[in-house]
Amino acid sequence: MRTKGLEYFPHYRRSVFQNLIIMRYGAKGYLVVDTLLEKIFLGQEGYYLSFNDAVGEVISRTELFGLVRASFVAEIVKFCVSENFFDKELYKKYGILTSTEIQKFYIEVKSKSKNFEIVDDYLTYSIRNQLFEKQQKNADKTKQRKQEETKEDQSEGKEGEETADFSHAQQIFKKQFPSHEQTGDLKESQDINLLVKKINDSNFLSGANNLSLRWFSDNYDKVIAGFYDNFTKPSKTANLSKEIDSFNDLKRVE
Image (cartoon, rainbow, N blue to C red; front, side):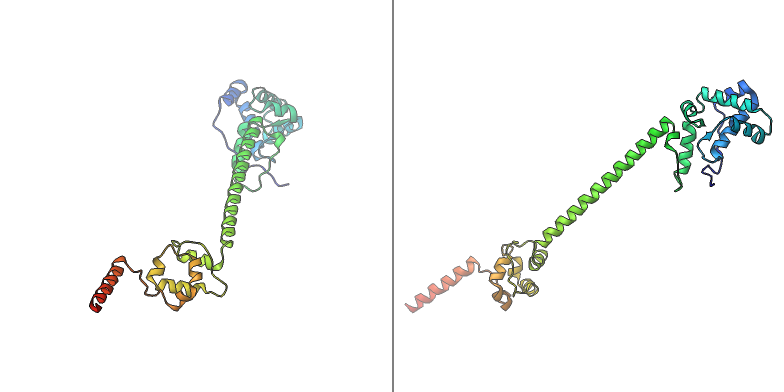
């Protein structure tokens, strides 16, 4: 069976509790605690150890080479649980040795791997809440991302619909002459590309923003024929000059 344990054992610096173990049980007590932690991290599961009398016997004989009796191992375990060095509720319910600190370290290491498996029932209350909050945050981020993607899709779809509402001629006219009045359309027989060329050839047509596509459709033949190529709108001064010339001509006749 493939082990799910860690590849190394994090030897913690001695905690206040471990100093208490030494004071109460001596070096052998500390050795038992260190061995239990090693069995948890490097064992089959990696974040807990199922413990019973048989396991205590194995630890006594094979792990500690008979330095201590199985009853001594059991006594150390009982003390660790009573002091909540190992989670009291999980030991009482499932007979396992684990803690929030052990599970936190295991999850931090294993979360970097794709083969990350854990039994929810064996999690401490604190770790279960932390994982739940993390899952909620990830779910909220996923939901928010999907909502943003949906809005983008809807926006793109709306733009596509708006573009589809315009004919080919209207789209080209709007792109080439955005400042012109955007009303009307060409007839099927009228060529928008030819019209655009003729508009660009005429300073008057290209600069007359009040002229719409409807106007160009109505005056299509004149535009194409070049009627407005060099067309300039007569000024009032030019009209007045013509009137004066006409008046002088009349006087000569008289």
